[in-house]
Image 1 (tube, rainbow over the protein chains, first blue to last red):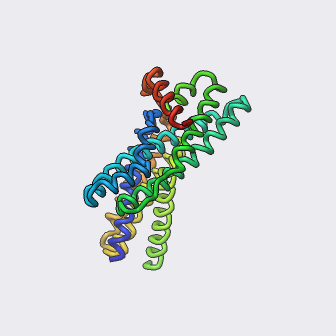
Image 2 (image 1 turned 30 degrees about the vertical axis):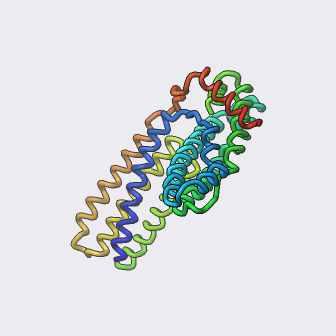
Image 3 (image 1 turned 120 degrees about the horizontal axis):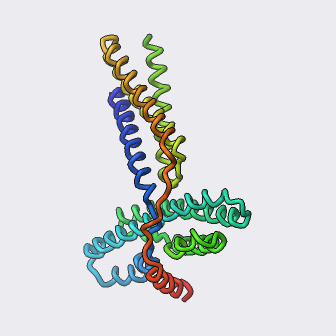
Amino acid sequence: MITMIVIALALSALALFYVAVRNRRKQSVQAIRAVDLKAFRTLTERDDELFLRERLPQSRFRRLKRQRIRVAMSYVGRIAGNAAVVMRMGEEARLSPNPEVAQAAAHVTELATQIRMQCMVAFAKLSAEFALPSLQLTPATLAPAYQTLRENVMLLGSLKLNSAAPVAVAI
Amino acid sequence: MVAILVGEEATRIIETGLLMLLFILSSAFGLHWRQQAFGIALGLGFFVAVELIGVTTRAHLGAAAAETFGAIRMLAFNCSLLIWLGYLLAPERVTIAAELPKRAQLEQWNQAIMELIHQ
């Protein structure tokens, strides 16, 4: 029995390494993807949810809420992906000889890291709500933090003048 | 002999677990690996995982599997060397940010979002 567990561990490690190689290839062509924050906020709006809860039968409400959560998760995933790309860009910009650019890059990287962590919390909350649709755990702190990241990337873009500016608009 | 095998198995389990943890956490936090660091970790991870399977199987099957285990071990180490060489010689990948949507469209979206946020 223990032998089987150990072999399973080793095989899962090999599978994990394979996935890591595949994801790394994807990462190299990964770009910032636009996020419709309005739609994201609408999806996570509690008033809408209360309205639907009052108007719809329980079973239909659950089904609808799970659909909303699935879409919200894809938004959170996109924000997390964008944060990862910004982190990479920030790391490169931190090496800039211009101290202003380096400082702004450090700020952006820190914020992107925070957002990435918040995304993990948001994923956990959304997963819990998906399992139990009667729960109310909206990742309400995510949207304002993401907006702050946008503003900081915009600042970094204005400091670097050319390369990061379109990215700031994109996110 | 059995004690040595058990000791090696324990060591390989710890190594595999630590490398798995490293890959899982770096993926969860979206951290980017440098090409060489990734190659070294990947090569080591591959060798250690195959070695773990080999040691476990050998401890289970006994000395009969020694020859097969030796061959597999040698093959795995050669593969790891190739992985290391490949990643050390390959140039660092550059992020391509070419798939950005059109700027005008993005500005419209941006305007709409800003209005919503500042309401």
